[in-house]
Length: 113
Image 1 (tube, rainbow, N blue to C red):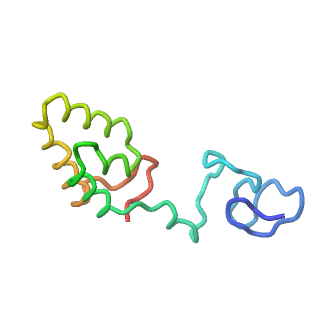
Image 2 (cartoon, one colour):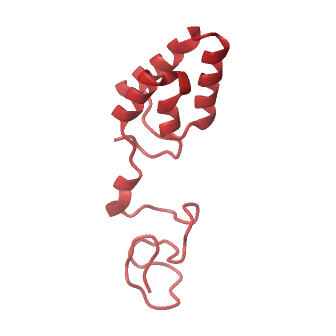
Image 3 (cartoon, helix red, strand yellow):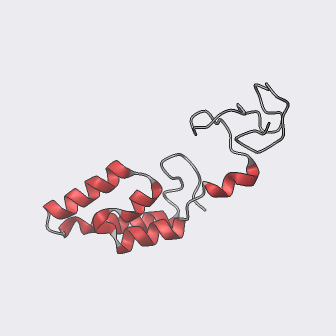
């Protein structure tokens, strides 16, 4: 038997992984308490990609969509559409804030790389 979180080999019927401490049968992200350090890179989102998306495609909130802030992206899109584009300054400033490091995490709390 192998742990679904970290892949360590375990004895049959084990309730807690000896390597990562998680439930070896966990299949959803909510059941997994920690991320094994070797797999941490899978969760990292790029600050540069998020910032450039937000500046270049800010009218649809692309940078915020990339980071998982769906409600904020929809709000930005609606506000830009309602004001005929004059509210486009908000997504541009938001993209600059992402690039400068004022926004450090994605919607799940993972640090931006």
